[in-house]
View 1 (cartoon, rainbow, N blue to C red):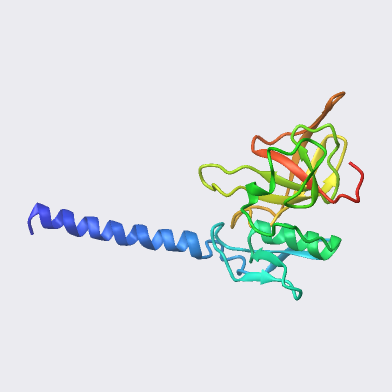
View 2: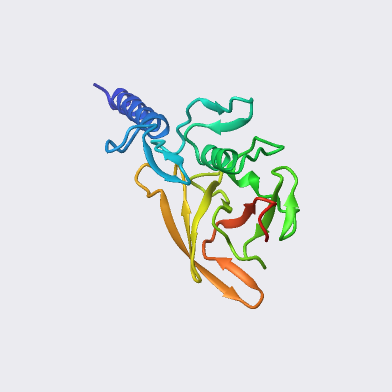
Amino acid sequence: MSKKIKLLVFSGILLIVTLILFFLLKRGNPNPEFTIGQALDSLNHVKIYYNGSVSHTGKRNVSPDGYNIGLTYQCVEFVKRYYYEYYHHKMPDSYGNAKDFFDSSVKDGQVNPRRDLIQFTNPSRYKPAIGDMVIFDGHAGNSYGHVAIISDVTARTIEIIQQNPGPFASSRVRFDMDSTATGFTIQHERLIGRLRMKKQNP
């Protein structure tokens, strides 16, 4: 077998292996400890489900009254389902990737009209509260960003509960929070802001 043919065979095998790995990472379940759709955690009886690979998407979850909740079991689907089931809140704009939930043109403490929620920047004049939706910007491994719900607040930390953080990541993570005379900063380089129900005081 000539060197040229060997190179072609090797390249073909490498391509097939790459495509298989891509398919498994994108659609498969790299963590055999859980099954896709398995309940992992909950906040106020609203469940977190295991999604497998971060980029895996299931069917669209639509409420009985036709409201678009999102693609199961993505991060956006959980936060919208939480706000719909716990607060009975429907966003005027029910679509968008996670990072799109933050509108950079909206000032700290003002209403984000696409989501009909109060928006806070990070840092913010207003202290985080349980139930706030936190929004993370995208990065090289995930250009869509990420969203989660604050499940606990102390004087110096917040805890978030999240769906689809990755097949081996925890549903709950705690971040440090700094407070000064001018406001509050959640210590995470990609956390760009928060959203909150209007009926709650800032």
